[in-house]
Length: 117
Image 1 (cartoon, one colour):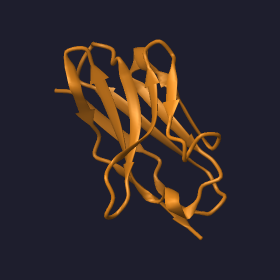
Image 2 (tube, one colour):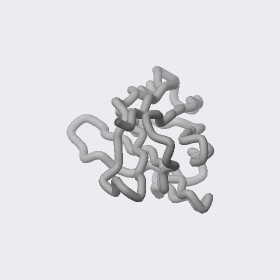
Image 3 (cartoon, rainbow, N blue to C red):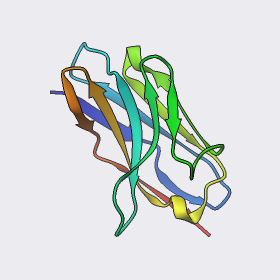
Image 4 (cartoon, rainbow, N blue to C red):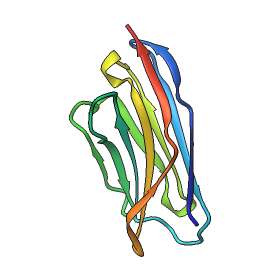
């Protein structure tokens, strides 16, 4: 069973930075995609950033230029460096890993990020 464990969330002042980490375990297979999503209260879960096995990345327009996704799909790890944080970035952030044999993906338990104004 694949498990994803996230860490690095917390409370930060607007303009500050946080770095989220996620590691997948439970399989020797490498994920095709590792991504970060977030869900704010009363809103749908949305894609923040994704990193593909071919090193391509994708970002939501709202975080472009402020957030950077990195990691190593061969090691099943992914990071999200978040700079210039805004109160609207406040949400629970979830890590997701997608495998060729599990296109629906696996989710982490989520980590809370709160940005105070």
